[in-house]
Length: 269
Image (cartoon, rainbow, N blue to C red):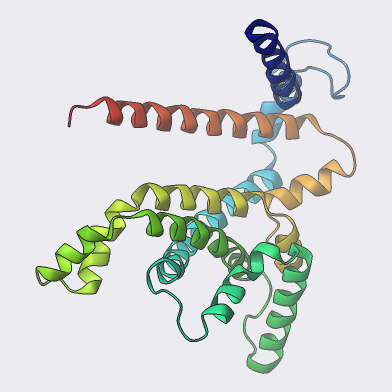
């Protein structure tokens, strides 16, 4: 029974990897295609990478998305960490259900609804206060932080609940203030969760197209919006080249992170 079962598991696993990675590999291969069409191979060429690096609109959109993603991830981790700490340490308090509901709302509300709500909020602010003057980087950033901090709070809450409270209690018994305990004891212990939450928020912001479509302005087109607008007119080889660079960058970061983690675990304690 072990032989057939092992063979079946191998086949199922192989099929899963096939459907997951063959499209990605095909995209990377066709980014080096000489032909302007993405359905036929005519020869090896780097012309689309050259075209990509001369495409000012696409490069501006990529740089804008990167900046917004970094700012979003940082703000979401700061806000979400405090929110997750409250959920994991403060227990049930008056208004706890409302607090949890408001914090979890971005997780369950469709992004279209969230985008419309934020757009109406900014329209009202502009009408009553004259601020913000127009939609742009700031409005996109607020929308992304609203979405991402909910994901961060869930990650941090789970990690906080798994911590051994005896270390924090010992520091309090020795005279440390709660703020000191949080920054010198709790934060170092949840550092891996903070890194994971930052990366998740960065990815969500970099990948978002729905919120950005509602909250962007004439001069603040993000990379997903730019790519989506071009893909609607037909697949372009420059998009394949851009996607290949992203895949290589992400793959390199993952490999380096795994190696650093493995080296850290192998070090004698």
